[in-house]
Image 1 (cartoon, one colour):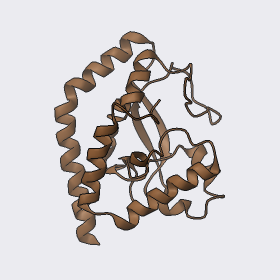
Image 2 (cartoon, helix red, strand yellow):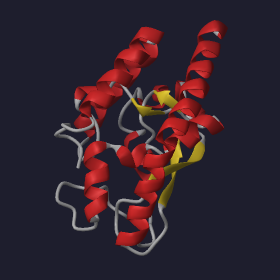
Image 3 (cartoon, rainbow, N blue to C red):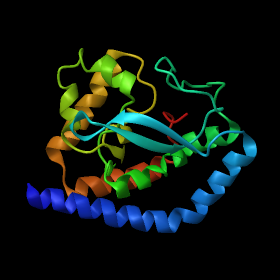
Length: 198
């Protein structure tokens, strides 16, 4: 188990630093485009549940019109009028997730793992899905086994979340370096034609 954790730690740190270096020009261009299109910060920050159920601050490129977030702020839905033009492109290609590479470098996230849920969603689903807390046995990821199988974005029902949890737990129980590489490559392949990204 210690060897597995060490490998995962090395995988995250080395790949995240390398990706940040390679993608720095693209991330700078995205930041500039966001600033030019609409007022507000370049980055969206939100508390999420992470390893051990502890809260952490997740970073994404801002894709919505800037407005104060409240506990009642709804999930983004298909055709949501709050999404900006550049935001629509970023969400469709998952480029809005790139700042989470900083989360990986800082140790609050992994490249691959269960996607971290917003606090209100976690509090909604944890009491009604028995295995929900088990997804916090590892660090959350930028992408994961559930996401490459179509379980990403809006989760309007308990059943939809239950299916996502099943995939999260499969990943936790069957983790291997090969599985991580498979998920990473399939996630890249989905960037420009994922019907669940909006």
